[in-house]
Image (tube, rainbow over the protein chains, first blue to last red):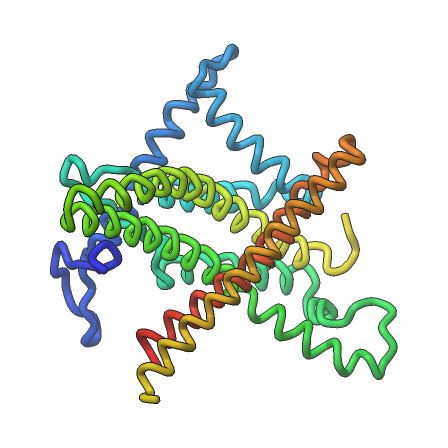
Length: 253
Length: 75
């Protein structure tokens, strides 16, 4: 489908036989960063009595701050910049991809609907978990695979399962975001196709199929906005849970 | 049957998984609401846990979608 195609904007250069090009995916990452930067800039004026914009930005920072405090405890403060960046970047990317900019001829590209982009974000989270875990606990970090008070015979079964479920985390993290965005966009595309095809088949069929499809599309679009927020939240939430595992091993804060 | 038609059948059968995941996601929110209405005071603190359950249930439905895509485009 056209909206998922990565197209080259600037051919770039070659490193070791690989073409390093500036694509529409990279362009929309830049757009996301600029939008995010402008959004944050409006809220960083540090007025004593905050305006609406500053309240909005402070609402987001406070939201992630309380998320980390709940899930990691007071050590969570150190991870606030990373998790906040992750949350806002994914949120802005998802919402920008849903914007109806096609009416003015700019077709948004949702780079979170690509496994490469979400995969890198997931690997970043997983790397932080590994680095923090080994930094704080050394080789004791491996006791993550050994739940406390498990009898030895059961342990032989549980430890491999825990290991697999730990190693699968970056995949599930990346897959969830990528598939949720892709599936939503495909659903909207299919419904839009219903309307166009029905309208081409004549006025009667156009009204019979087109109007319900359009109503459904409105509902699904609203749902997609919700999904864009929820997926960003879930990514941040799961990242904070995984970081909590690395910081505290099994003991809760 | 030809191999291609069997692949498409399999992709269609994967939609059952998506439907079952819908049951799971609905169950997560239903159980949360049921508990939250019984004890509204504790509800706010458990929202994070609800979303963990939601994420786990949803992932399995999305895997069904991945299976369908793999069958149609890759296999």
